Image 1 (cartoon, rainbow, N blue to C red):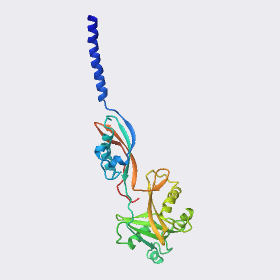
Image 2 (image 1 turned 90 degrees about the horizontal axis):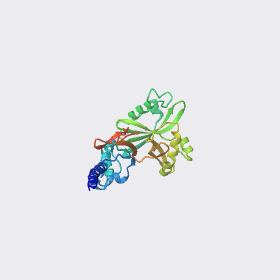
Image 3 (image 1 turned 135 degrees about the vertical axis):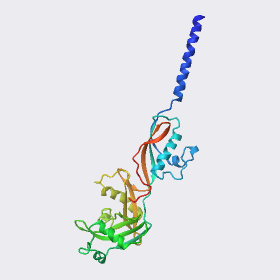
Amino acid sequence: MMFVGLAFMSCEPMEDLHDEVDAEIANRPIAGNIDYTMVEEDYTADPEDGGLGLRFPNFNSVTDAQNLIPEFLAMEFPVWGEGSIANVTFDIYAPVVTPKTTTYYEVTTEDYDSYEATEKYNNFDSMSQIYTFLNDKYPDVEDRTLVVLEYKYYSGQLNYLINGFLYNDDQWQLIPGLTEDDYTLMGEGYPNFSNVEEAEAKLPIFLLDLYKYEDLPAGTVKPVLYQYYNGSTQNEVAYFVFDGTSWSLYDNLVSQTAQFGYTDGHWAVSYTHLTLPTKRIV
């Protein structure tokens, strides 16, 4: 009986120890590590359904993303704790400034003769000359006015160019156009496309060749001015985004990735290089 009693007495402390260990394990936070891409429901679903309750499936700014993603991670991974890391890919609404009105102008001999720097050869040979001309020609221009300008430009040889110049926030922004050779290269018999759909299909291929010698980072957006024929010649500006290997039509959304870590009881951004503005002229 004495030996049996000793056996029972020695078991009770062991059971208590196991219970304590089990409780410690059960309450110990999980340190998770994940690469996560946010989907539409993550942005727009109600908070009780695990979403952020936003109106659109994207963030309005980098600041919004940095402030709201920790809230989302807390809902998505409620048992994750200290030491957890999440590399989150998300979309930011970053609209380019598009033309509101468009006007076409061909620079004349009289225009060149009006300036000492251009009257001798009747052409421009620097961008500053073009901007001076535009400011004089359109002194009261409204924001988001696109001037489609046909002019002569000398840079080693004389070029006949049609480029766009978009005015916004007190400055002119060059929107590169296409030359007759560019259209020929893309299989066109005339210096224009037949329709918008044809332009949007061919220009990504053209841009891949145009920028093949430039080390452009993923996310680079480039504008193009092109003409298409619809009973008469129409001017159109399109924006394309580079993903590191190919170009596609830009939809005003930029995909970004930032790292968030769980420390001191909450999620916070731990690494990011995001500097994207909410609106821009590219």
